Image (cartoon, rainbow, N blue to C red; front, side, top):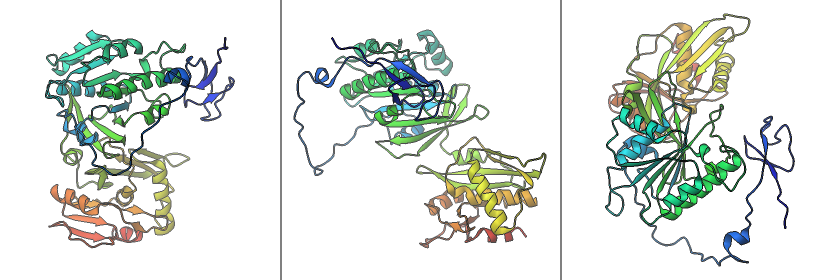
Amino acid sequence: MTKKTSRFVCQNCGAVHLRWAGKCDSCGSWNTIVEETPPERDIKTATGGEGGRKIDFSDLRGAPEIIFRLKSNISELDRVCGGGLVPGSVILVGGDPGIGKSTLLLQAVSKLSQGVNKKGSPTKCVYISGEESVDQVRLRAMRLGLSESPVELASVINVRDIVASLDVDESPDVVVIDSIQTMFSDTLDSAPGTVGQVRAAGHELIRLAKRRHFVLFLVGHVTKEGTLAGPRVLEHMVDTVLYFEGDRGHHFRILRSVKNRFGATDEIGVFEMGESGLAEVPNPSALFLAERRGNVSGSCVYAGIEGSRPILVEIQALVAPQSGPNCRRAVVGWDINRLNMLLAVLEARCGVVLSNKDVYLNVAGGLRITEPACDMAVAMALLSGLLQKPVPADMVVFGEVGLSGEIRAVPQPDLRLKEAEKLGFERALIPPRHQKKNNAVGMRVTEVGHLKTLVDSFH
């Protein structure tokens, strides 16, 4: 009889160690290594014999199969997923507690249950909650006005019971598991939420979804750093990873795709949280700029690209006298390291001294921007706040700033200009374009090659 071997797994990063240690060598976390007993299963018992089957290979030629997609009738969700939900796909949705993940998925399955599947039959949707009871889910549905939707509910955490209920001939078309951290596999001795349990439960549910060809939504918790909790392998196993972003102080919510095998990555969908749940925002640029005042210094409109969608947002900067022994740098919605680099370029290349000032930067509306094309808009807002001179209300700005102060070209400038023109802007400051194209009708476009030119325009 073979002896059971134990292994020690880090609950933060999933690294496997031969013995217990106080600190994980992979991620550096303390007191996160837990002993686990792997399931008694090897490759022979898994395949049912001594050897595997012979694989039939094929070449790249041939017509690909046309992918059928289920429409949720929530256009922002369908956009982020690549135009709809592909049967057999697995979608992992992560976000901060209380941000609206369960609300969004309950609204989605309610809409889906009112449509038809590929066979023309009503779409069968199942919502399985491991965190709430059935009555609690019903109360949320009643508050959202979804009580009449034909969605099947269950409150269970045992993966074996879930698989036995879903692995039938009349399997559902859409299944929501809320959340994967609460699922429990009785093949392991560890508690729910540990790395081994999340990996084993996710593997069994994903295998079932691929075999029965239903759309599987997995709700995932996030850590304090904002990344999905549990093993990193879970993100590799699924087809799509969506992050639900936003600040509780704002009513906007951003659904962002960071991985998608059936669509574009970095695509976003914008929602507005209200009393009746999440409402779609078809024109987020107009909403982000709705409360903007054009005659205030330190404000600049940035024309950005999120996925395939152009979005205009307001960049706000406040430059104040130093209030303590050290200068303060506070940033909301942008990278603080990028701000420090931009402040250094302004001082070293343009002679603008900000090292003795407190600088506060904010992206209005709760949107987080990661695109380097925002550099010139941030510099414009900083100069406006420092010199107390407002930026023209009808001007948009975009462009990347290099360490020598040069303004670098950014992707899709014409798409940004068209969005700005549609919202009534008449002027634009952009980097030099290599390929000259017709400007948007009615807009005066000025190309800026160096940050010093931008500084001189304020004097």
